[in-house]
Length: 261
Image 1 (cartoon, one colour):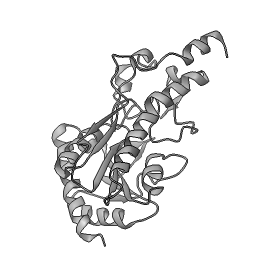
Image 2 (image 1 turned 120 degrees about the vertical axis):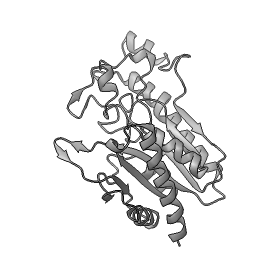
Image 3 (image 1 turned 90 degrees about the vertical axis):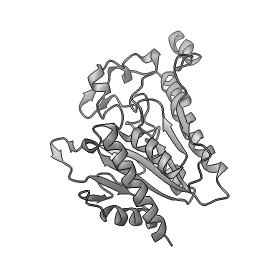
């Protein structure tokens, strides 16, 4: 380890001016649903500047899931559900990627180089894991642990780009799950009852160990019902649109609950 690396190993990434790594909303909500939002923010810790990217790129999908946090907050209110939101950009460290994944701290995302993620030392990478990734997932685990004596369902709220690599993605919303399909199937059926356009079944993304951490860890390993929700971003252009999607999801969640065995 060089002298620079040795010094960096003892420095904190997050300063007193930076917010904590996660936000916990409505901790004691009465709903059986627990909400998480892995890509809620495009914030970068002060010490990292803008990672060598301009403000336009930090507003892009490579940095976060636009609109997802607004949907999650409104849905938390409508369902009276607890919610954990990540507080930093997926470019700092992706809270829904295994830490061994090349996409955990991406040096390139959707064809865009991320200069501030190149050439990181092991200690610099560890700081991002220890101060951003781990606290977020400890908060999710602690929330679910505290509810272990009651039934819980886990919904992970995301948004997706309507066009990726020049390919149009037609779904207005998608629901993903790969094990216990009961919740996902009931949600899909309930969403299809509204005139909202195509509903993706494991589209535009499915859940894979190489690319997903949150639901395999907090849903599958615990054996609780869970699903990933992906909303098309051009349907989330402003807060009113996001609220409408939250209302649709709340209604679908209530109908799905009636359908569950």
